[in-house]
Structures are given as C-alpha cells and as structure tokens.
Image 1: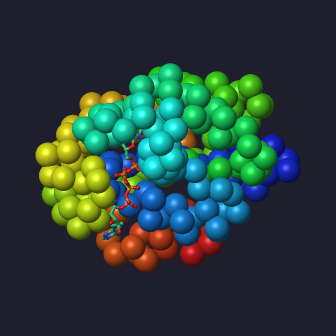
Image 2: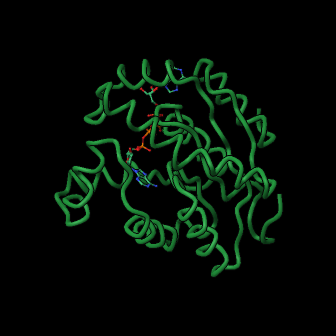
Amino acid sequence: MADGAENTAGSRVVLLGPPGAGKGTQAQVLCEHLGVPAISTGDMLREAVADGSELGGKVQGIMASGALVDDATMAEVVRERLAKPDALKGFLLDGYPRTLPQAETLAGILREAERQLDAVLLVDVPADELVRRTLLRGRADDQEDVIRERLRVYREKTEPLIGYYRERGLLLEIDGNRPVEEVTAGMLGLFGGA
Ligand code: B4P
C-alpha cells in the first residue's frame, strides 16, 4: 500500500458491497483500528432528511424508492466532507463510490490533494441473506420491494466497480456471510491487526 509519508498504511479505504452486506456495521470497528473517520454517505443523506435541509428534501423520495441519488449531488456532498480537517489524515468511505462516475470523482478529489486510495474492501453476501438482514433491520427503506430494487441497482451500477478497482490492484475481498465478529476479524487481518 503506497501513501504519503505522514500517513499510516491503509488510511484511505473504501468499503464496497451490496446493500445490507454489513458495511456500516464493520465501518464502526474498522475506523477505530485505522484511526480515521468512517464516512457513510447513507448516514449523511439520512441526517439531511431528518434535518429537513434542502439536500434532504431533494433526496428523500429517491432514497425511499431504492434508487441512487444523482452523481453530481453526491460529488458535492463527498467533496465537502473530505475537505473537513478530520478527513485529511484519511478516511473509511462507506457507501461511496456507488457508480463508475463516482469512482472517477473520488479519484479526481484525491488527485487534486496529491493523495491516493490504499484499498477497497469488498464485503460479499448472497442476495437472500441480504434481504433477510435488511428486513430485520427495518429502516424506512427496508421493505422487500425496495430492497430488491436496491439490489438490482447495485448489480447494474455498483458491481462494475469491482472490476474497476481490481484492475487498479486495490481490491481486497471479504466473505461477509459470517457472524459479525468473524467478518471483523477477517478485515483486521488484512490490515495486520487480527
Ligand atoms: P446505505 O446507508 O449505504 O445502506 P446499505 O448499503 O443498505 O447498508 P450496509 O451495507 O451499510 O449494511 P448494515 O451494516 O446496515 O444507503 C442507503 C441509501 O442512500 C441508498 O439506497 C441510496 O439511495 C442512498 N445513497 C447512499 N450513498 C449513495 C451514493 N454514493 N450514491 C447515490 N446514492 C447513495 O447491515 C445491514 C443489517 O445486517 C443490519 O441490521 C446489521 O445488524 C446486519 N448485519 C450486519 N452484518 C451482519 C452479519 N455478519 N451477520 C448478520 N447480520 C449482520
């Protein structure tokens, strides 16, 4: 893993995987291990909806339907967040990028800052288990038809990122179809902290 001298290895990491794979669950532990903030675009958008901000008003219906918020809006959200002081030393991105244009946007933001990604962790889980977990979670967008739509969108728009990051030598794969602690241990092992 290559990076600037003042940064620890693995400090700019993306969590990739289908909805309900457990990205958010794992991010909470992994960010402490890496000493960087966990940045969840899903959480940021849900906060915007809860606050009744202009952004929240724009994205509420989109999220409820299982569709993706447009790339230009997400670029603004992420650019602003990554410019905050706590993200300068690194970050764990959970839920961004989700499309090839978003991956290019992230690469551009990092290039401007003379930084680069260290790793992309793919958390993989079979579709039936994803539906089971998300129904149990019971968030506003966790009805079965919406979950199926989010999975369809994932396959169409997000799965191409697997090849994109594999070609760039950044992809690390984790079997997410195991108890939470085992998935965590597998991830920490990749970063030398199991
Ligand atoms: P997100 O908030 O990113 O939601 P997610 O992918 O469904 O969840 P995650 O994989 O983090 O699963 P979790 O840990 O909660 O996105 C929501 C919406 O926001 C999107 O649909 C989209 O509209 C919008 N959005 C966000 N980012 C965007 C972007 N970049 N571009 C455009 N739109 C964007 O785990 C799920 C459940 O499983 C939990 O209940 C958990 O307890 C359980 N679980 C976790 N690990 C488990 C394990 N190992 N075993 C059993 N259960 C487990």
